[in-house]
Image (tube, rainbow, N blue to C red; front, side, top):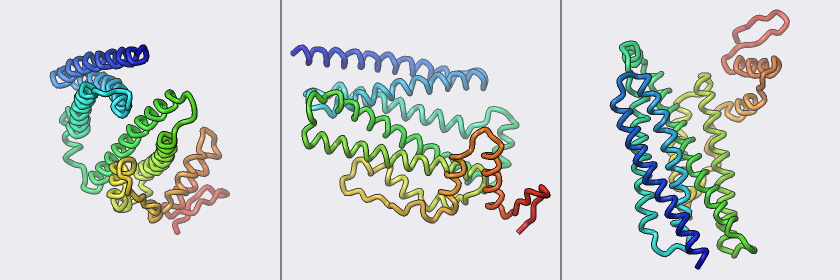
Length: 274
């Protein structure tokens, strides 16, 4: 009984924070849209991002309670989870507006002059960033559930819970693997060492993985997903070695030169086009 009261107290405090957080989010959201200039707007957008992060953490806690067998009436929890997710969708709209709307004639002019190839690169870059963010959100959820399972562990976990724990750890490992690959692709895209068409070929598989890997029991991962992307592993290895010293920078420089079709002659400090 005491444990039940304690749990209910934690839930009540969490839901109170949700109410306060949503009210504050709404207040900042209004300020974003009523900002007098771009500097003000950027400041409020930063505040809005901080607030949505707080709400996301509360959502993770609520989701762990929803999955708990100890709580019978979950209607309030589900309602508050949906309330937070509504604010998350609103924040995504603000983010999209920020990335696409220019607030000066110069910015508008630059946007209009954007060539199709550059626009395509920016679109795929945004998709990569969004995919990484979605994977990180799921990682937060997995870690929250793992903490919940371990916190309740007074003795050896029963078979179902142990299997779930093992599965969550597997999800964490695979998600982090994909994040490393996507982050490397972002760097390659910035350095023009990967074609947009190559990234587009893996887009459907990545989206399917994010959507179904942790929810569909019949999901089968494409283990050859990145095999056709030239130099992906080599680029990741080289970037991983780069620090602040001259030699590391030289290694990266030599690698990029080879991709671009140059021979590096260290004695004469010159290039020879292949």
